[in-house]
Length: 151
Image (cartoon, rainbow, N blue to C red; front, top):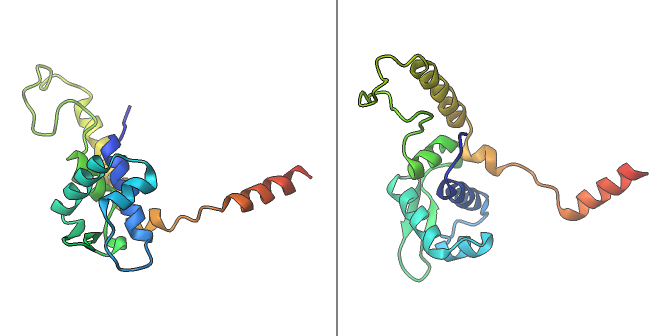
C-alpha cells in the first residue's frame, strides 16, 4: 500500500495552515501544533525540515516563526512530501539500485518505476494553492443541507 508518513501528513497540514493565513505574520510551531493536536516537538522538526528544503522561511525572535518561502501556487504537494520523506519510491529497489538479487531478472521493476513516475507527476501538478483553496462548509451549513434533504 502506498502511504504517506505521519510527518508528511503533518507537513501538508502545516503548509495548508500557513497558506490560508490572511496576515503576513510568522506562525510558530506551537501555534500550528496546538491547532491540530500535534506534539510541539514533532511539529518543530517538521517545520525545520521544510525550512531546510526552502519551502518555508524561519524568523527568529519573540515574534518569530515560519512563513511560506514561495508563492503557494509554486509549491507542489510533491515538493512538500519529498522534503519530509525524501524521494518517492514504490518498490524496495530504486532506479539505480543493483544490489537486489532479482535486479537483472525482475519483470515488474520497470513498470513499477513508470507507475512511480505517474504518481510523482500527479503530486507535482497539485499545488499548495489548490489544496488550500478547498472550501469546506461550516457545520451549520451541513446541518441545513442534511435537513433539507430529509424533507
